[in-house]
Length: 305
Image: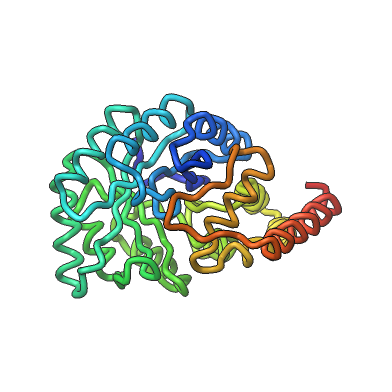
């Protein structure tokens, strides 16, 4: 089960589709194995970059069962929903299938600190004993959660065991939360997102790892392994080799299409299909991705990675 001490790399899992838009469960199994081989110590499914909002309830359950059946690392399931009935239905199914916990983002209607706090108190009660991750991603949700509100939620909700930190800029938030726990506040795990854009700085600020996706997910484990062994220069060199592709993938609305193209080109998934509505990559964009991938490969070879 997920708890406050969880560390490592939880790769955000894309949802593979066939060219006609149907679920590609074969690719999903293949992708799970590939992510683990590339260093994932956990997986997160049905997140915002997993196209969860394009799946039916039955399809979501299929994805959960397929992933949990085919991996031996902890699985976190995104269960954000407009109401608690849908949230608890998916949460119960996830835990029954063997998930380690669930992740909940705030609905965009929340505006005040009191509303945000109350929402997560109600979430905690609805989930019961199920451990959950508070997803803090204001660029996507429009909900600003201050460090003081996070600390209040953590204090009130015993089953809130992790923060998925995706505020941008947000390095100071990590520092404030760690200073608070050093002073006696309850300490929870912090895993960071944003496509790995600030991974090294987040680790230096006190994050416990990453929970994000990238077309080359081995980057996160390579950087974190170098960091954990005290080789900060090597960690920076490895990160810098991937940075042009990280930057390119960070384009709003286009990032997932770029990521799926990269995964398909490496054979991680069979098809780069996104479900409609979706952006389409032009040949010019594909040529740019290919050029970045070649330069990245050359640089990693020079580094001996």
